[in-house]
Length: 98
Image (cartoon, rainbow, N blue to C red; front, side):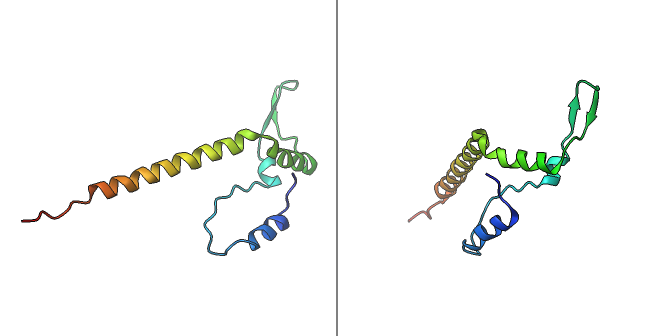
């Protein structure tokens, strides 16, 4: 799905301004920085146009692995943070009663 900066701004304006977020933002310029090896000419080329960059960015939604990887990373981070919290709570030492 093609998304513009304006679309992103509209979406962000609906959120609580103090909300913590995670975001990945790539632009056409990022796509144009990728090199492509052309096996016919045996050289590295940068054949990118605005149209190609638009198509690449628009089609990234088709890759479920991106969402799966982020979901897995979030799950692992949640597990790590919860484990750390439990370790801190179990370390609390009660004062001995005499």
